[in-house]
Amino acid sequence: MSTDRRDFIKWAGVAAFGSVALSRCQAPTSEVSQEPFAGLTSMTGDIQPIQKLDFANRHNRARSIMRREGIDSLFLSGSTNLYYFSGINMGGGDRLFATLLPREGAPAIICPAFELGRAKESIKYGEEDIRMWEEDEDPFKLAGEILREKGIDRGLIGVDEDLPYWYYYRLAQAVPQAKYRNADVVTNELRMVKEPKEIALIRRAVEVTIEGYKAAFKTIHPKISEGELSQKISSAIGKLGARGGGWVSFEPASSSPHGTIATYSLREGSVILVDGGCRLDNYSSDITRTITFGEPSEKVKDVWETVRKAQKAAIEVIRPGVACQELDRAARRVVEESGYGPGYKFFTHRLGHGLGLKGHEPPYMVEGNTLPLKKGMVFTVEPGIYIPGEFGVRLEDNVVVTEEGCEVLGNSMATAIDKPFG
Image (cartoon, rainbow, N blue to C red):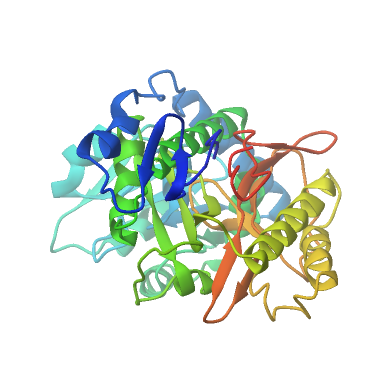
């Protein structure tokens, strides 16, 4: 998130973002509100999407873990795991669309017959063996037949951790001799450590989000609503070649980490919290900035600076081998020492979460998670302090673990309340 100059329109005669100066009583013109988007062009034309060879490599790596764990086949449906291994977003409804990924042999895709054309347009790997079922047939019986054909109907099946329960129930009825376990021992191990292409996609998504925020922030004026600013962010990100946006909280709404139903208007010194991102080839960014409309109060400045220090403290301990919980501890220690403790009293949530095909996925930066960081893990670092009924401050950046530390994606961390992008 990098608005090189985030001088949010200080209506007491202060210039906003360069030469545009507006007084308190002067309504912004359409030229002022639209000009920030005039120079926006796509930033995504050169991205490298995940391709067939990448999916094949994922299958091979999955099979290696399956051999180690004694899993004979994965059963994936209705989740981002299905996309991770096949490149298709289908399933999860009342009609089964699934991938059976055996430890030995080719994968098989189970597809409603009338969806075959749409599926073939989207599948990036595994299209050589698509098994169709008609509306009056039982797709779970078909799954059992495939497993018997492959000689693993009495084996150990790794079931997608996001599988709807009734899918699992029907599968267990159709293949009663099989044993079942959660597939996350395979899927989490693969997906938590990102491939170079995945990191590049997330990095670009972060960069797009930052530029979108920069442009949208320039449109802030006294009468702008939370919804209007949110729409501006979506519009700017769209012009930059991606789909995404952000939710916006003014004033006391910012004291709830995920906002409130109530809406608020801007006044001098108002806190503005913006949390959002975009997706590129289904990979997410997740960026939060907190700024003010006009001059912040001393209390707001104190809280903001504490959150910045907490974020910096957490980032400084990131390196391979460090337990996830240590990041949360480092940030929470700063918050508590500044008088905003204990525990979750004001810093009400974990420090961060993994980022990839899901906006929230493992690993989680939270007390009790002793999982060691590995090179290639991508996650958010987002400390916050929330004072009920008054305001909240959160700063969120996305990082990737490197050999000796981490890279802050986008390289645009906030350095001051009026410099939200460094």
